[in-house]
Image (cartoon, rainbow, N blue to C red; front, side, top):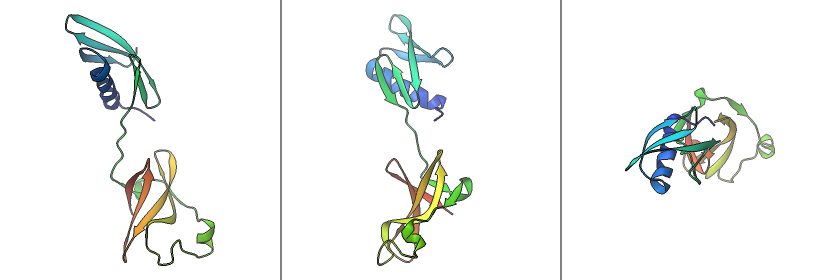
Length: 140
């Protein structure tokens, strides 16, 4: 995962506010150092970025990744992968209604294939994918 400068700044600021002193003045990504203004002078501290985790002054923080509320199928790679019971023409529930109905569609989102589910309680449904437990609506 590529961490943006804003995400890095936010994580380092959170860590500095919890465990550091002074205010962050600058972040040098080439040397992985943080320049901090103290009450009497200044200091430089090193940090390390490992995937989406920032290590700073003996502590660590995960970079906050925001997922959109909705995605469009036209912006992502889509494939059809039918499960065995779908190939037999069966449905997941007796009524065809439910909160997590498995569809035959999969969407490539953030480099991983995600199964598309459908929430259907009346004559229309809403499709979504699950990313770290959060529902992201899928628009056609």
